[in-house]
Structures are given as C-alpha cells and as structure tokens.
Image (tube, rainbow, N blue to C red; front, side, top):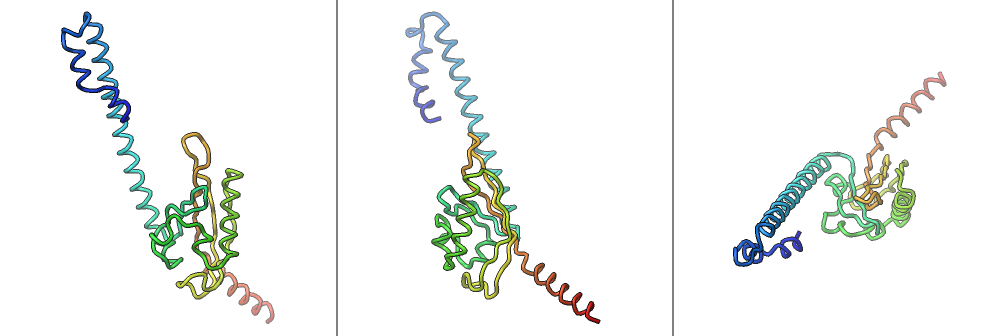
Length: 193
C-alpha cells in the first residue's frame, strides 16, 4: 500500500493532467483510470483491515467469556494469546506468559514437555491432537489439587494453507471425573449388598 501511494505521487499526477505535459487525452484517461484503481484498492484495503479488527474483537469477546482455557501458540511454541480463564488457572498475568513457551512457564518439566510434544504433532501432522491431560498438584500457585483437562490442539492455517499457529482449548473435567469415580464406588457398594 505504501509503495502504491509513493508510486502515485500527487504532484506527478497533477502535472500529467496539466495540458502542457499532455500528449492528447490518452495520458489523462490513463491517469484517471490509475487514480480510480488506486482509490478502489485503498478503500478495499481499509475495509479489509476494519473487517479483521472486528473479527479480532469478536474472537476476543468469545474467548474471554469462555470458562475453557483458550491459548494460541506460534511455531516456536510461544504463547501469543491466552484468555482470562487460562490466566486464572495458571496464576500468572498476560505480560508474564505472552511470548513464553510452556518450558519457560511451568515448574513441572514433564507437563511442559507434554504440551510441547503435542504442539510438535500439530505442526508436523497438520491435524488435530486431543487427549486427556493431567496437571499435577501445585503446577502453579493457584491449584492445590490435580486438574484433569480435555485438551485439544488444532492447526490454524495461514493464507497459503500452511500451519502458522496452534489453537489450544482445555476444558477442566476434574469434577466430572470425581463424580464418575464417586458413582462407580457407590455402584460397587450397592452391588456388594
């Protein structure tokens, strides 16, 4: 866009419209067409940028209202976005997490290695990775009990169809697991009688 604006210098354009520089009306028509196309291009680009901004606002609104942890990783496994639910679970703020890899964030090296292994699979296979992930007790300052997550990592493609990011969504299913366990114990006691 900046190159296009530099190329269509307003002074040069007005000089070409000056009759002393014109050789008939062909130059004038050409300049008017060029100016119209450049204006259309600039308008379309501005509309596209506004559309991207609106989409980003929608994504943030959805992600911030979710109780699931939503994280966006780049190809270096660095977090480029994490929603508030993720920040609350991990117990750190956005500035501490953004731009860091799981190995730089988590005290538990095994947890960090598992996350990075899943990220590698997404980038290599270009497909969804899902599993049940167990976070140990005291993985950070906020959790004093183990957490069980339904963990999904999806590839996010760029305009060339290549995986540029990995979108992670983790749902805390600890209470479901506990309820199922309690129900199973209750059934076993019932069967004993």
